[in-house]
Image (cartoon, rainbow, N blue to C red; front, side, top):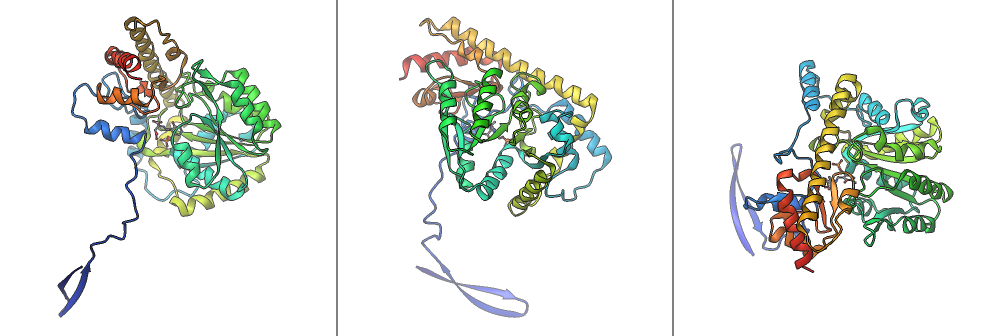
Length: 427
Ligand code: PLA
């Protein structure tokens, strides 16, 4: 152990301090955490110096030139906000009132009786993730016996969220690798077999990572079982507008459950559909049986939010409130969203065409066209995904998911070569 003496002047007095430099850190017991399976991919991508590199990891929209995209309507709303010279006072714990109104209306439809009757507890929160985390804390506090059912597979962070909130979870079957489609029977059987009163986490649209959604008829059957088992439906709506290009159509799964008079949790995110990734803007909505119940639920969500992060940020909330609240800007947003969804559909088609033309093995790649939203779940395993990155400089998650939002038409052929090589030459 080294002992160093330090002389330290303070006012007119001179004191001698004895400082002990310790060789053993107090953090010896803190191991290095592994990189995040999704956001860690972006870090690795940034470190790669090869010109061919392509980031298909995180689900973030890029232009055809593979540049990040700020929606024109967002810029317009921001300019208006700047002109108004709005202040930076704290928001209430529940967030910006105009945002909360706009976000619930966008989700349920402005004419929905649950809104008119004041049966929805809406809290602006820290985008989709923060909203899910707040709901998880609520479940842990008020439903300590309940477990959450999550789809297999699902967005990787779902498990972290419930683990950190100490909410037990288990998986229900969702993806069938044989059909590269939905394992609907397995899904229903697992939801049926779960203890009554479980929470069932459902992706409102554009399931991540599979890109496979239930049909409207299947949604009805899912709602039947959930209702019968007195489960609580819990929707994660992170891609409203990105599945079909229509905001209303993509909210139809949630609205179907609400129409049945069920109590429902819904987490919302504006990261993707308004491109507000870094603004951390979203909401947690809880549809309740009566306005009085909604008031109590809301009061407890606020109580949970206060010690976690006190109150949410204002900038993104104002953008959403302005865009959704103004008919002209709302129309412009819908158009830009259709364009983004359209660009992804184009690269999806081109990727399929390139794979079909180049792959002489006869493999059927049409599952790529059947998948929807930002992603394609390629079926590549971990070793094959590693080959995509190590040999081809294509960055993707190790579950075989690629973000088509990060792909351009110009890069489709290169990607097809890499997939064919990885698929046929690596086991
Ligand atoms: N829910 C699902 C299903 C998601 O895919 C994501 C984001 C979120 C919630 C949370 O997004 P937010 O907190 O930004 O609102 N998934 C991304 C990014 C796009 C990520 O992993 O954080 C993904 O690449 O899967």
